[in-house]
Every structure is written in structure tokens, then in C-alpha cells.
Length: 215
Image (cartoon, rainbow, N blue to C red; front, top):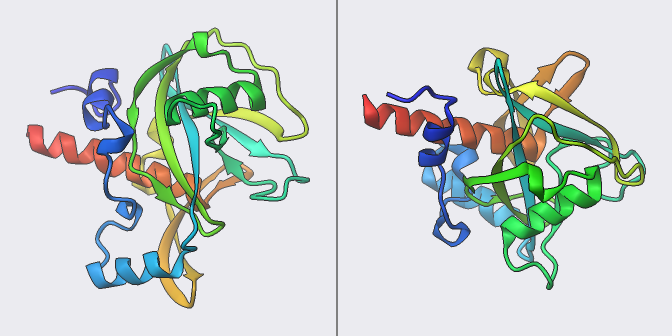
């Protein structure tokens, strides 16, 4: 069986087309269906299409995830740890190209260094965005050019660390009057939470689900 973090296993765990992705509540997997329906109803009805790149850097000692800390001056999600990304614009042919464009604009990551892997399920966030996460493998010799107006810094975290349940810290969060259990991922002095942590939880569940099928 492929390793949980091998490129082959990751590819086979993802969707090849964004349109084939259905469950935007997978980050709440395990919750009763009626609770998921209430959470969905509590989120904004008008959902702006957006895309993020989930960049997996191919290091010799294992995959890492390239993350950004957003600038403190931004209107939405200021100072948060996030994947590079933003709104899907009319000129973007699809979520994949929107994610590539945003990554190049925010951190100067050239599409030449990015290899398409697949899609995670869409993720609805409380600020009114419906985010399509696109996973890509990143050549380790990539070059960055940080747009200081949008991004404070970029850094890498081992994928195995992010997806290890021992590193996930449970807490209660309220959305629209509902209280739910979510997870943060502390890493040194940083804290990965919110939509970014939710997408990583979804990623973990997809990898584990395929591994379970292969046993």
C-alpha cells in the first residue's frame, strides 16, 4: 500500500475536477446530519467563489506545507495563517488557475514550480466565501517574492505534523448561535486555525479514508 503521504496516495485521495466535489461540510465529519444542516443554514447565503492553493513542497525528508501569515492590515482574515488564495475572478478559467494566479500575486510563486494534484471539497467560511482548495506539489527550488501589502511572511510546516491528531487542539466555537467542536494546530509560536485548519482536517480524513479502503 502507498504511504499515507506519498504523491500517489495523495493524488488518488483527491478529486480530479472541482465540479465532482460535493460535501462542503466534511470538516465537520462525524456530526449529526441535522447539526450540519443547521451549521450550513447559519452561514451566509451569498457565498463568493474563491480558491486557495494547498502547496505541498517536495523536500527530501518528506512533504511540507507552504503557508502564509496574512498582513495585519487586510480587511478579511487579517494576521491569520492561511493558504495563498482569494476570489475567483472572471478572467480565471477555473479554480486551479485562480489559485495559481493568487499564489503568484501574493507570494511570487511561479506556476512553473507547481504540479497539479487534485481538489479538496469546497469549504464555506463565515465571512461569506465558498473556497475551493486546490492541492499542488511544489518543486523545492521554488522562488518567492512576497507582496507585503497582503502577506506578512511565508513558511513551511511538515505535512506529517499538520495531519497528526496528537498535534490537534480541540476547542468550542460559536457560529450563528451554534456551538461546535473545531480544531487548532499550534506550531511553535504560531496557531493554525479557522478555515485553514478545517481544510487540513478534511485533507486528513480523505487520506485516511482511502487508506482504510486499501486495507
